[in-house]
Length: 398
Ligand SMILES: CC(=O)SCCNC(=O)CCNC(=O)[C@H](O)C(C)(C)COP(=O)(O)OP(=O)(O)OC[C@H]1O[C@@H](n2cnc3c(N)ncnc32)[C@H](O)[C@@H]1OP(=O)(O)O
Image (cartoon, rainbow, N blue to C red; front, side, top):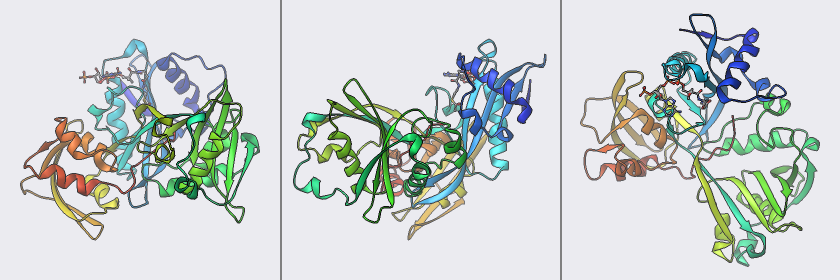
């Protein structure tokens, strides 16, 4: 079997193979295909010349703790024909793709996993989480007066998605730069309506918040159905604006409940209600999976809030690599060098991916038996070091 890069001429065969892998019959070519970077695509071709597997990657920027932006590969469009599964086609695609990502100089690769059982073996670990919050409108009074005080000054205008122009793109871009775990949404995504609402052009209303000077600083896209107002996403870098947009949704007439999709775990909204049980969290799930391809570079690039030292023994079975690294953080800057000192923790590269953005505590993985702590203080030390001031969150779908 051959793994070969794709070109524009492969668009139809790539799409056909991928759709068959997912068992779908799209009536029109998926808008997502207009955002596809076919120079980053791979086809697995059987000896008879038939394409049997696909993989691709988008070029995104990921925000790391410390508001540091890095280029990453956003792995996507992975599929193998049902007739050719469990013969190593995906493994061959992943091997080639990881080599390509490294060759491009990207230290990290990320993805959303269709099934959680697939990607650990390739070195990916779940790193950000998301949940939905369902709020009964009639129990949603804020604890006054304190919670009301944090609402932002400014105004809200309701637009249709098609009337929003560049507003959503601009607001999203400011938001994602300040939010660890967030991905860029390249212009062509907005242009082509590639993705989920409100990136797609599906009919939606959008509450656009503007500050006192009239500059858009937040939005919530939503739809109404059978008494439920569903918010696809609330995007703002300002907590007070998020509060104003939540209040707007909760005060909407003709509804009994508001469903806020894509909330980061620990969202402050529940704490703002007089009745703590007014909001119920559900459907917690992993979102972004992270894979480190250059461990010293990845560790020295992210921001750090606590000083400390840790020796990590990292195994990467898929790439047949192993390394022991001394990570030293002083004044928020990290150094990471190979060492032969005794390790504090031994872990798989997928577990390093899970803790990298600060969204998974190393001690949880020690307790789960994934990570080995070599002395009693090691897990606590690692927790203090990897913790991010703000939990990473990603809601971009790709
Ligand atoms: C980022 C994204 O695009 S996510 C989308 C992923 N794609 C899909 O879910 C589409 C439907 N599924 C498929 O197309 C295929 O089943 C794939 C791509 C998931 C797997 O392709 P395959 O060619 O069968 O995988 P391959 O034979 O290389 O398997 C490698 C290993 O992963 C395991 N594996 C493969 N798929 C799965 C799965 N869905 N769940 C658990 N384990 C899996 C195999 O058992 C094998 O394990 P082993 O090394 O211990 O023997």
